[in-house]
Length: 178
Image: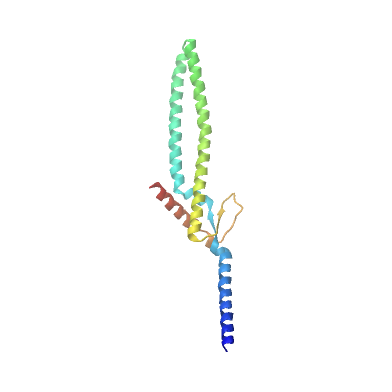
């Protein structure tokens, strides 16, 4: 009788352990609980850091444009003097300053593109970093990115964590700004 009871207890414990392990493995592998996606275009548009960086870039570009405008105005007024008769030294100085103006204009255009590239690199790096923290905090094993240039084209709305992620992202960014 004790052997039967021990055998039944072992059998029940084994059955219970199998159910627990099976449930755990199914939960671990179930995509609906561990794999989510975010709409990358929406995240990019609604990330508050983007707005702050755009304001900073606009300020820099305005400063540069003001400098170029000032130089152009100066060159235009000097050009009138040169046309009415100027010394060879004044003409040479004018041509040198004109060439410098065009160099600055080209440099500002090229560096403006570089600023935008660095801006995007920094922005996406922050999104990536925060996505990792968001996934860890929410027990998510994988977050897929959905966007117009991505291979991922569909996901059930139940797996879409875009809005929750945007809230998290902006909250974390607001905390860093303080």
